[in-house]
Image (cartoon, rainbow over all chains, first blue to last red; front, top):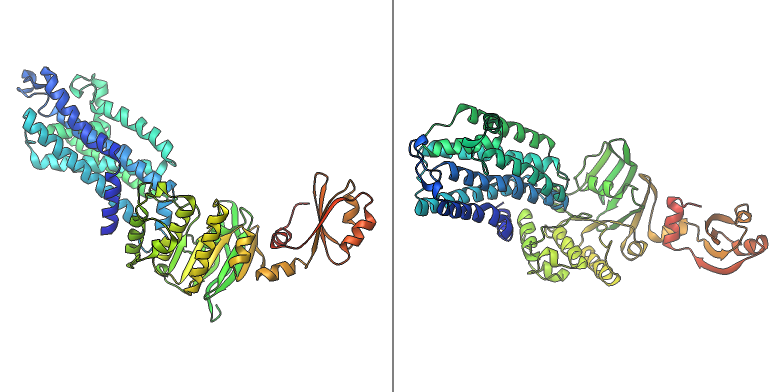
Length: 245
Length: 283
């Protein structure tokens, strides 16, 4: 298991594109937009003087990392492993292929954590992004939302047969999900109906819960409930539907 | 299961949905033997060995293997590795699964350790697959379509490797559709057809069973005249070309019966002919 974790980590590091989109791009976006657009750094009197770069923007940046890993990197890797018979070959050895799934999930979760620490750390130094004010609640929401998104990634792995289909379906899930989470149109500016929809999507609820806890508010029960429901439903369906070949 | 047999399959039956993959297959393999399984596509070869390897559960019948899972090494048809995994890393990883040492194994199969899987040639990939199946020091090795897609030289190198595997006392179950592979390697062969064992014998026994026959190929406009002859066992027509097999007196009977023989060639029965006869040729 140690050897498997070591080798899968090496293989993960040999895919620069995944690391670029999941780790580097979010940090670059946070800095480039945060430093170049003046309005992002102006205190907003309607929100008690909170700046856009204090919570609303970095929460979407964290979400971008986790969603890239959960909707694209993890399921694509696992579907390729199944499609090419890597899991089938492993099933002939004394080690169960479940070990490979566990290791991949752990590597992606670790990368999501690393990307978050990096984005918020660099943001803290260069943009004065505050340390999340409700720190324990922020950690709890980070983990819960991560569980919901990775559960959806595993569900996609279970139902999408080929890597080619996975790329198309991964994008078809990723872009609307990121739109509803407020990547292009912040949730504050969304029409009421759209925000209601956003509230019950996994990414919308995740982004809102991260933002609330970063800004020092308790997460809304609605968002917590939505994330628990997505994690349970998608995770349960993934376990029922997964096939090794 | 007899005293010397290490694999015993009795009345194996396996269904996928409404399709019967294996209807009724029985055979046993002795310790140290190379046992071949041949048959056309869809005859049930892969399903049979996957049941022996413990990857599938039979719907009925029994499979007994006198080895623990860690003592069975398996090379599967179309099982690749991640593109960027190097051969040396793959063998180390698989050795760790069994708690063994991969010492010297890559050298022995002639695969460079620092080359990524995507950059290995087809022959190197197959030899790496063999090494991965052997890295756990198995008592039983199962190889499914080991040489399909290889060039003739790579195929011969692979056969040499399998012969070496046998010299270590490993029992080998080999799925193939190359008759030359069977003749070179196998002690005994089960011929599968439509999910059943059509014949089980040594390669020489299979040829003899096909009758010590003579095969004659020629052109004629009257193939129908041949079917009525008692000396003729089978007739295959491909355009104007006719292939006839039969026992003693075949040639004399043909020449007497058919008025327009042209381009006549004759051959002794080969394993190929035996295979076609045993699996039911189209005429």
